[in-house]
Structures are given as C-alpha cells and as structure tokens.
Image 1 (cartoon, one colour):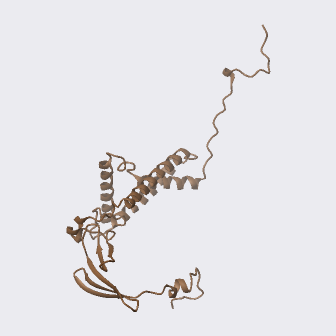
Image 2 (cartoon, rainbow, N blue to C red; image 1 turned 90 degrees about the vertical axis):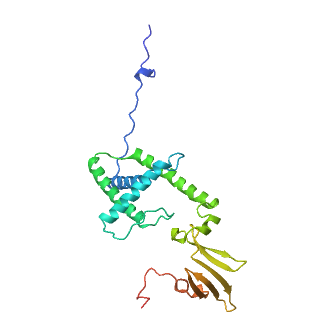
Image 3 (cartoon, one colour; image 1 turned 135 degrees about the vertical axis):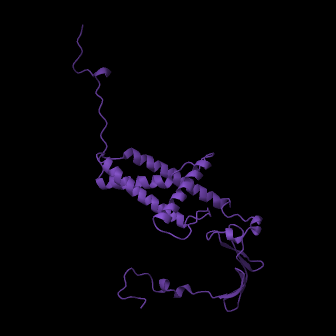
Length: 251
C-alpha cells in the first residue's frame, strides 16, 4: 500500500482552527465614559419600547407615573422644594418635575458607573454592549422623530376642535398657548390646547407703519401700539458679533 505523501494537504480531522482574535482593550477613560453613558441612556429610555408598541400602554404609563413620583419625592425631601410640584401631564417637557427626574437620572448614572467600574475593572472592553446600545438608541430616536413628525403632518398635537370653545382656560399649559390670526376680520386671538381664550384683539395697520391692537386680554381692556423695529440698527447686526472685547461694551 502506498504511503501518503508528506506534501499532501491535511485531512479535515487534522485541520487547524485559529482562535478568534481577542477584542482590543479600551482605554480606561473610554470604559468609564461608556459605563456612564450606558447607564444614563438606559435609565432615560426606560421603558422603551413599552408604550410605543401596541398593547403596551399600561406598562409605559406605569413606569412614567413611577418616574414622576420619584422625581417629585426627591424635590420635596432632598432638595427642600416647598412649593407644589406639578405632576399633571400638560404636553410640555420642561416642567419642574422633568428637570428633577433628569437630575435623578444623572445621579443614578454616576453611582451605577462608579460601582460598575470597580466591580468589573478587569474587563477590557464592552464591544457587544456598545453595539446593542447603539441599535436601541437608533430605534428610540427614529420612533420619537416619527411620533413628532406625524403629529405635525396630521394635526393631532394641537388640533382646532370646536370642543375647545367650552373648555376652561385654567386647564391650559404655557406650551399650549398659541395665537391665531383671522386676516379677513383683522382679528388676533390667543388660544390654548384646552380651548380657553385668554384674549381676543383686533388689529389695524396705521399709515405711519405702526400696528394697533385693541381688545380684551385676561378680562382687561387693552390698547397697544407696536412699531416695527429696524433690524439693521440692532447691535448684533450693525456691530457684529465679537468673541473678545477690548473694553466692556455695555458701559
């Protein structure tokens, strides 16, 4: 029987399988920044995608109520805020309770990152977690963009409903206040998302270029004259913007 040639390729049983290359080790600063960022975005995105998927509204609402309650408790008991902290949903994202929750998220993220960096200090990188976080953040960003975009294309955020005419002004929010103009009857009104009318004014353009407004604003009869400002005379336009001034310009 002929012996196998020493130059023959190895059989599959003798094939050599190379070990996968180890992941490159991250710089300690990069690992710390990732741990902080991961904790922050996870806490900020929770309970996403619950609340966006059909049939998950109850989960999203439960988490949102818990977050608001926690933020209000921190404001009252830890920060000493004595005035009432409104927690009612008013369509605005700049309530006091929203900023309090952001503070809670930042504090919790820092604490989680500190414990994480100590407990897992031997790990060289977080490539898999980094990839997963990027995917989730892309979906979260896309869902928010589509949510706000469709609310503008199909006016569901601030629709003009006749039912608002009988709703009280006290249910409005600062963000919900907006102006509408009836050019045919030369009338200007202030309305809000709840339908209240804090003001109804008539306007007329005067020959000298001013605009006169007359009407009722918050039960008070008012008359105002508005003059058009010459933007070319504004300092930011005429003088330009300067990062550095040799002398205090406003003195």
